[in-house]
Image (cartoon, rainbow, N blue to C red; front, side, top):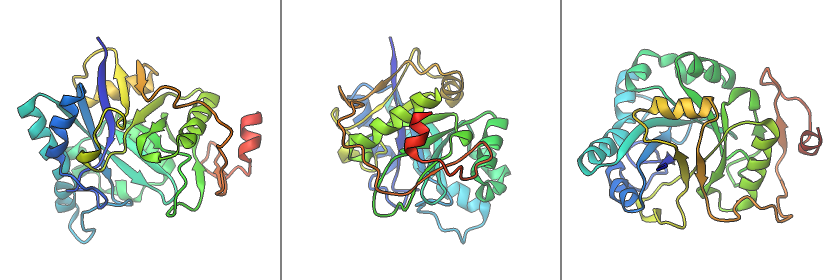
Length: 264
């Protein structure tokens, strides 16, 4: 029997945009039949709730509070809770999985990484990188930036996108590149956890650790995605109004247009 996991979740302890505490999500996901959740709070260059004036050690401890609260509640109630984070490079965001709190304490250089360094180093230490909501358009984003050389997979479905057309494009983009696809809710409030809203990934068997999720992504073994029926259907309204920056294998702008990319 397949196991269902939330892959993209924010807590109020660690994400400035988070509304609910980590522990407040646990029973909601149990009630919907999820096997586990992955906490992915906004990291150092993103919308993080933790002061950058703290020492690195204190910053890491504070950053992990949302995850740790959810983990403790999950252990008490019977929901598996795993650790990850979401790093931002301005217009583009990346979900990082497979590294833990102790690793963070030992690697303060993580906050200075470029996209390419993030990808290379995360993989070197046994993790993976997924580009989150690559085609999202809203007021704080000034560019659609696609850096396929710096990711293991694409978040093809994101419940926080609002417009399914953005996900349809992400699905087509991942399919064009033959990259694995994931789905997540990008949830910020436990009040939004409902059967029609949340998304996730199916795994063939229960995960024993976050390493199982990393392995499934890196080996393209995700069993399936939880999305609403017809979610990826193209309806002719997938118009991109922002500039598009498609980057090459060196993570430099290629100058290629989105039309040219899909016409390859």
